[in-house]
Image 1 (cartoon, rainbow, N blue to C red):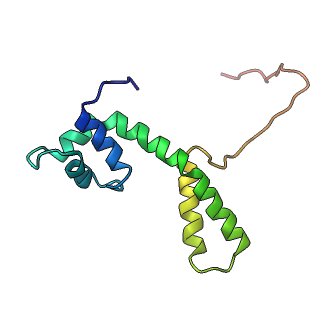
Image 2: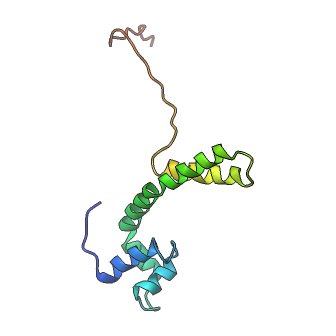
Length: 120
């Protein structure tokens, strides 16, 4: 992502979007001081890269909370709503790059592989 200079309103839009507007684009537009005549879509489209970068950072910074939620579920496995909390925490961690992946480890004595001849 190329770092571009944002206007004060654009920067305010990004800041409030991930704070008091709680992800609501229309509310962020109002809080940033944009006129009602300005299209919310045009603001979002012009800030698409910045919003995506801030979203990634937001998820990464909230990954610890999701991990703690999973640990609390392990401590209290019979609490109501645990299935939904676990699914939400897993999604947050996956999106933040902490996905439990399928790892396949192959160890060989020699890095040379001999394959059978190819039949045409």
